[in-house]
Length: 97
Image (cartoon, rainbow, N blue to C red; front, side, top):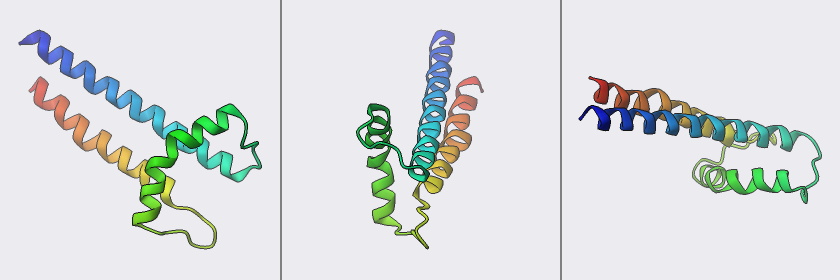
């Protein structure tokens, strides 16, 4: 049982790491949108392809673009922070508990 609990804790830590990395990709997407980046650059294309599925859903559900400012990255980052602080930490505490 001890091995299983360590395994679950490591999975939770890895999920937290992946969510942190995705949050940085979302921040990179916001920065890229402020500058005139080359849309054919492979890095820019990767950032857009990895973030657009979730950001597009948020934009369809909550059209919060006021004055040309897109608030969907902020909403997605807040959702990631919620998942990290509430769900992942609760799961880790239950396993250690």
